[in-house]
Length: 429
Image 1 (cartoon, rainbow, N blue to C red):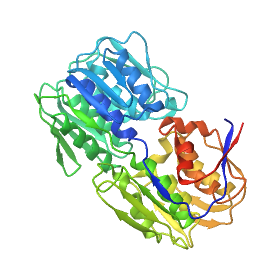
Image 2 (cartoon, rainbow, N blue to C red; image 1 turned 180 degrees about the horizontal axis):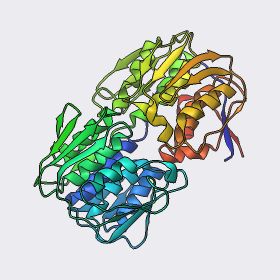
Image 3 (cartoon, helix red, strand yellow; image 1 turned 30 degrees about the vertical axis):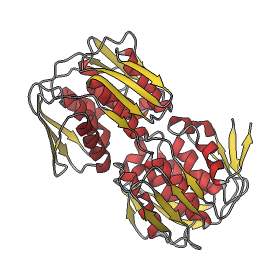
Image 4 (cartoon, rainbow, N blue to C red; image 1 turned 135 degrees about the vertical axis):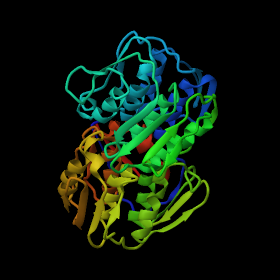
């Protein structure tokens, strides 16, 4: 499919279940593989990112059986088989970072690589932290970037220093390896830690598999040696990042949308996206398992908001802000440049094409709004660009989303699910 366009519609309303969380699914896949015995994961998300993780784990000897949306994973307690060929991980950042950290447990040399964009996404801070423990990792192309070669290495534990300012996934990844240290591991964070809720998510999931992590003010994390890593039964909750798009359709159209499988009990920080919409004049209601947003007659700008703890929703909020009355400044976006594309530059470029005036810095975007224009949205093979700019497509005829299949990375049924809230899809082959 070359492009998709949405028919203009007001008062978008309905109830919807979003797909299961990609972030939880990929963490649970690793944890189930590290545990010894059979774990059962229910309501697993099957998308490009999770399929890359599943394939890689199978290549290092993990038995995984699929029964509809349930996986039975036979963990080996950290004892893997040598990978017979390189582990290709597409553009799945979570897969690359998590597997880099546990690769020292795999006999022989393990090569981890991905597509062309992945080779532009930095991994230096994680690699240097692992090197600090004596693991001799080699860059096979460009220094600081994949592909990399990781040798087998018995992990001693001890102290590890790592920057917290690039990606919280580095810290989550180190937790996985630290559980196999011969002695206690202390992870010291240099600078501020971005995306803290994702670290909290990892700690919460580790506890379900019997592992405790001591969090000392997000500056130090202590993982004691000789903890009993247990298999678990886990049902994956709905994806809070994915819910942001549907809640925003209500916000921009004076409609009402209820998400039926993400609520106040969620372990995902992105559940708080609805609170940002509330600042823009929306009525918001949370229950333990649902979020409901009712859009206002006129959206208000947010003078200043920091999304450092939920950067995956930044694109969505920026697009909504382009329709608000006034100027919105979104800060805390320094990690957007190393995502699936340079999302800050992409936001600036595509919003400008749509007639919305913006300014960007290295870590922020200021949105002034404007009059919507018909245009083709370049998605840069980034799922979140495609889903966020779909909001504008439903307001203005002729806004086409190019390469819509890029949503397969995390949400293969996105455009199909839009029809559940009565949005008509126009396909351009």
